[in-house]
Length: 193
Image (cartoon, rainbow, N blue to C red):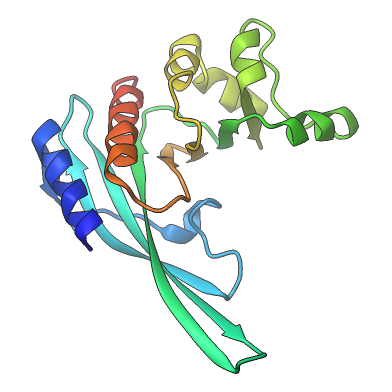
């Protein structure tokens, strides 16, 4: 809980923020925040509105983990907190995922190419793994300005879209520095409209 308080104070010192409970964020709408199995459940722990030129939200997710050890017949339970930026944009991205490209992605692409190509932006193409369900919408939305802004995305951050809704975040546990970095990056993305 101390990390949450420290994060709130650091955000308040650098950004204009308000506590906001009136957003309609569906945890199950995005693959990155949905519960993939029954060993844990995710719920919204709180939200903040960042008042920038294009306001957006920081959604604090609280994930309940549970593990049963058959040897000792004991159950252990704990919570993990993460933070995600949630933006509503003017552009329809379709369904899209952007993350840092890994060596495994390059190997899989040799056998099963599914990644979007950007022939006019090789540096972006080599740095990020981008998949979509609608190439046409994604190419229209991922213009040069947007790709240029994404080049500053943190190493452990992931960006996912569903139509005009966009989330940016990381599955790692919340920490103050990472949340400040996320908020700065989300401010840049939100300003693109």
